[in-house]
Image 1 (cartoon, helix red, strand yellow):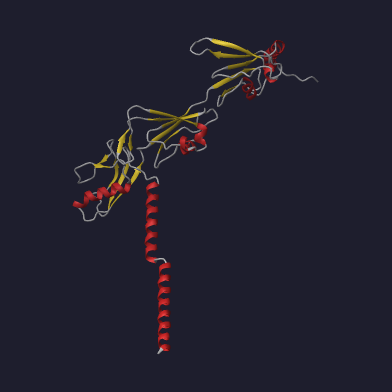
Image 2: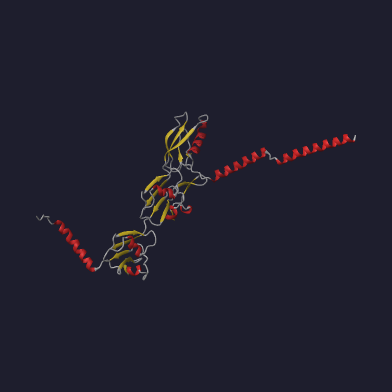
Length: 343
């Protein structure tokens, strides 16, 4: 009897251990179904965030655009050229009311037209295509290699627009300017058309910041914008230098640097009497400033900072000037004499 009870006790104990082991394993094992649901939810949330954070680069129809509207199996309702009027509306056959088109994409407008034609056709299939892009003009003028006007078919940033005109020219200054024309219909963030104020807005950016793609100096251009790259202020180096020229002031410029850019003083220059001719601000008078270039080169005098439109005159010594004048007069005369051969 005792042996039988012991055997039963051992059997029950083994069973309890097996049940406990199975339950423990189940508790430690993750639920496949719940993980899949959680994973799908996280993926969906991530997709939604990505969609909401990404910029919508689809073209938005605007006034002046010419559209082609195709209604499947209904050529009498189709149109090859429908111009969007200045209020952003279009007209279609058999429809009494104007149809809003401004700030809609091709697909959105096609869907709206299909809804209006449901009273005449069962499940109409409509397609809309932009044939002529006329609503988003921008222009680039000034010191660029190829000034031009563009009709945008997608959002374009300032740096890309400058690259399309070949970049700034050598005479370009330090800034790039955008004039936002007033009265131009635009699409707001909600997708509805808005009209800019009548007064034009003016924005200026550092050209170097734009060229390196700095976000604060590389905005999206807007329809009707005029991008201008002004020429740099200039100084003029004349007289006895190797390359008399006008030098753009792309950065602060001193007299010694300006003369160096002009090739440096030619032989027989009076380097201690270099003259700066400067327009007096707010006056028609001019002042003359004499500079000792030799002293500047020896760090015995301060290098003079130049102002816009300064004229630098590097004189020649008197004797050399007279000799050059004589040569300039005699040389053309010699060229007109007959040439004879001495046997």
